[in-house]
Length: 494
Image (tube, rainbow, N blue to C red; front, top):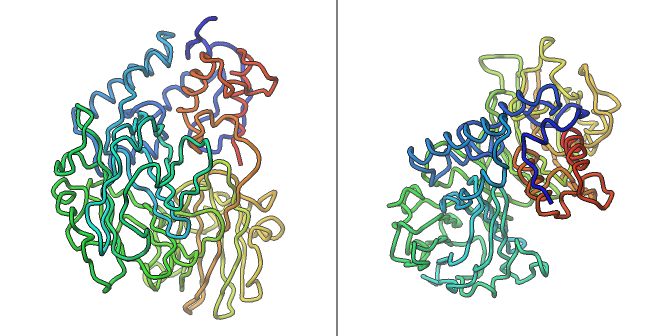
């Protein structure tokens, strides 16, 4: 069997293309060099532009010399790719040791009892030897077992889940039960709690007294309920610039559903402001969570979960640049999911307003000049309460474009909500995410994203004759599957 190189594949044949659902241009034989140059510069190849920016700026980011080495390595990869040199697998070999502080606690779901870790680094992270240290109001220094995570790996840009209720699906390498790991403080609820994730030293050992071995720290508490033992090791994380300060807690409530990491502000210090608190399926309530952005270039980023996601806010005088207030929100629909509903739950008082959506993570101020930028837009009033506005986007769109079906597939979207009359308009919208049953073939590494990392993953699958290689579903792994991967990638998933 021969090993295929990236350059050989690019030169292999002509490819069909259509509009991509992301920032890269469509990949064709005539623009292959342009496509190569579109790969993210200055980061390990395989990250999306957004995620690589996150990894570079997130708490625990690498030192400058590491970043320079990464940038040089990426340039070399691109030059070699264009010239037809080493294989992708060979070029990535030796770069699989992730920065430990690229592994972060991304969400804690109190309803399901699941902790989600996410690998923001550009390389896979071997969790062998890693351990948790946890504290709550009554308990301090509860340590998981030394070998509990041995053999577990978080691939770049993917998640890993710990199930407190011991209900992890069998034979899923990305999910483990609490009892598999050992001792945690408990229960995992909304009250005072702190969680640290430690990685081993060069000898494979974890010393919980060594602050330099903390990968991440997170803590939350119901305001006014007392701290108890929860801050036993917080000072260590603060000393490593992994948390803002003792006494800083993510503010939960007794009915909070989850805390979710949403903001990557560019500094390395974790803080409560970087997390959203989901309450009764409400992802943002302006009265409790602060004003939603009125800046089209910097919308409020929402972390949606499967099912119901309620946003409550108010707008007024949206055409008044001095006193007016539009709301701009942005979110991602992951691969394997769709936005299947946009239910108007409240619109008070009864006065006509406007809701529109565009692709991407920045928005547009509605006007004649920007009309064509929107995928669809609709006029709404109190009579539309209870309606799925996605249906209106299909049948009664008032912008130049309309949706062809009442769903939004995987991708980034920005919504604008506005009221042009001289009144304060209260509204509530429910953004509903559901899973699709169709596999996303071009998402070769299964991370829920479509980006150049899937190109590398397809090469590895081809060389290993792995099932992910088969992109045309003929039961074989042949060079024809490369053409099929290009077509599938350009078509996107939803």
